[in-house]
Picture 1 (cartoon, rainbow, N blue to C red):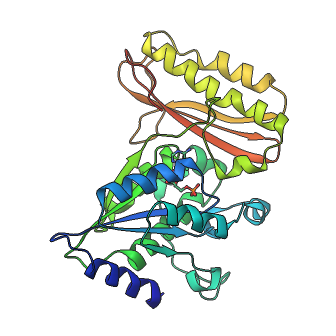
Picture 2: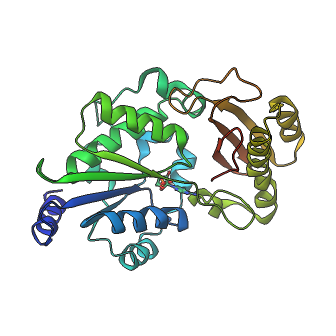
Picture 3: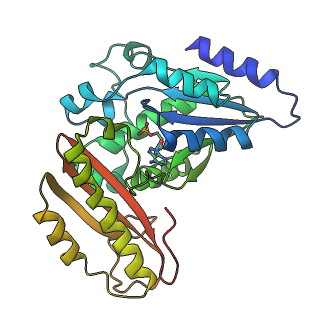
Length: 292
Ligand code: AMP
């Protein structure tokens, strides 16, 4: 850990910038173009870019999901090098949590925000996310004189809301930046977990983003969202076990009462598809085309 701090400080010292900006991109690896968009944006707006690769056991409520989460550090390192990352922090479990599973004893509690939707289905998930992000910021953030930004994807919209609140409530000296969801040619949100989908699972997974695009089109046209009709379609689909499809306020994650929408809202969907749980999100803007 001292190694990575020393590397970050050295990289900061070596920049020619009078007011250096450090950009942090936290990941769990198995990197794809969604991660690449964050790396690229961090590279463009920071003097020093740090990426972390760590599959965080605290945010998994299902041990099998944790064990089977794809790990491919060598390939990831290639992508990180191609994107000009200055420092990579890829700790092993004991380096991150000495004494695990007994430690860490102290964890960050995300309260009711962390118990909605994904948090309700995966108890402790957002506390695990907030704990590891707090640790990463503490380990990686440069001295107070240096500006620090951290980059997150809007695909994980609830996670983003929790992290924004974490930084605000605990006065963490990091500015949170976010980027739109990156999708493949069929509209499916890129996810490391997609690697575990069979061809038939993948076809079934396409229904998730299709439902979100339908909602975005209805919102754009000021039409009723008719969530129950979309839910019924998804519940009838093969290979797909819908957990939730909801439209929420982007800050509080509480369900919106508006239908048709009068102001921008966020659609959240989660389902088990074949062996994996997938989530996706989309901004719904009355009168505007979908953005991601
Ligand atoms: P993960 O490795 O899944 O923990 O994700 C690391 C970061 O990449 C998080 O901030 C995610 O929101 C972001 N991310 C994951 N998938 C996508 C995607 N399809 N588009 C944009 N960002 C993404």
